[in-house]
Length: 339
Image (cartoon, rainbow, N blue to C red):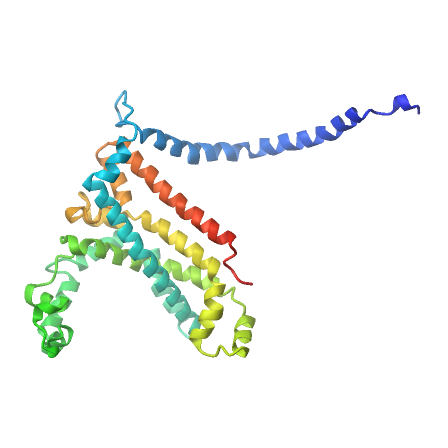
């Protein structure tokens, strides 16, 4: 074979590049259905909501007007929407730490039991499995001002002289109105769902009651990954009490689980809707004290057909969720777990 018969370097590069191009084309062809589905279901609705947030569009109207940043300005300046932000962040700040803390406590309690752990798991997880709308109706009956079991129970405690004196702190020489229980006994039980001072805290309590069982399950899964050798090593180093073992071994080892639980709980807290819709629809509670974001999106975008302002609130909600996701990723990349 002569030198002229040898393939040129350009021909060799083309021969090498052709299989790579065919492999890349096959990869894009195989992933095309998933990409098209993601574009249709995830990206396109977000872009559509972003576009509608700059308009005054209403469903059924043949045309709409561009209003620029007017919808966002209304969210941060009008009292209705400032109440929405206040109620939303009050709910999130209250529900997230308490449901996470109770979930961790329940998981540690169940792990320490030698008998009956399955019963406690079922009891704590029952609110998660139950339909929240149905359970909200039960809470509505329990909180009824006249026939509710909670107010009836408070009336029974007030009727007992010893209990009334104990909880009202009258033995310290205080007047009956000095404590909350004393005011209940003298003025009557509060209107839990009709008083703006109580409505948001009732919703927070139901959210904690319904959510901490889910966090308990996640923490139980995280506790199974903690090596027993770490506890033995910590005990050899002098960590003999339960608190020291928790502080030095358990809590650091639960770092990734805690990041995930807090992020998921925050997102679920921002998505609060069922309880508010069942207890306070329409209107968002007394004085809009429980006018959370998801309920505002439903009321403005669906009930009142104000798609523009509803889309603006939706975009704001997505921004909050994106911020939480980025914080979770940043913390995870800092290697919060211990091995």
